[in-house]
Length: 274
Image (cartoon, rainbow, N blue to C red):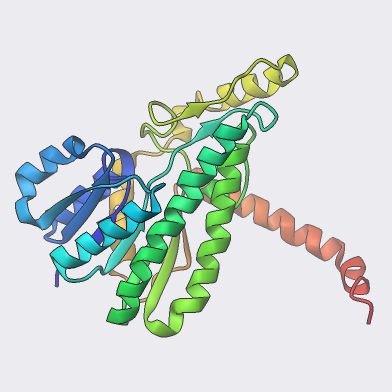
């Protein structure tokens, strides 16, 4: 049976790739973009199964209107994929207030507004699946991505809380955590801070060198099977890492965290006081 998918940030990258994958197999897709002409090619092929929706996720009122438009058009929303977002590159010290707020506004608050708008529909249905596109950098960090890391850590905490609030209503929540992929995320979609503090040049040089290995960047097309599997799963996981870099990095970090927790166990328990 076909599903109705509501996916944000569908003009390019993961969003467009996944939207097309759902359409190809016969699902109905509401795809949002700031510029709807980016969806013309999909509209020409898939016709009424695609609803292009103009949306800036930073505009909460527009988010509510868009969500109501999707519900009115398709009658329901089975799966929400919160994919809109971008990367802000630069050291924390060099990040302006405007850049910091804009990063959180899109990556965190935009996702929050869409989730809040969709939840009443899923509650009424007593079913639904919210797929939040986070990052492996919501579980670990890299230098020069401090505000991006922070936005995804926030998405992780928010989404885990939502999952515990809606489970009894038949609504599932999954966090998708990709490593770097060969999309425009680190290119045309990215924003750069100023880089005029020379003390950080060694960090910038090391970061640039780490990105030169083509094997560290996943192939976007390889994620399609994973997304379709998650969408069809009756018991989807709370989290799914995408890519071997994500798996290896997060596994290493969490192994070290457990070791640290155990090493300081006595101090931690004594701090309880009784």
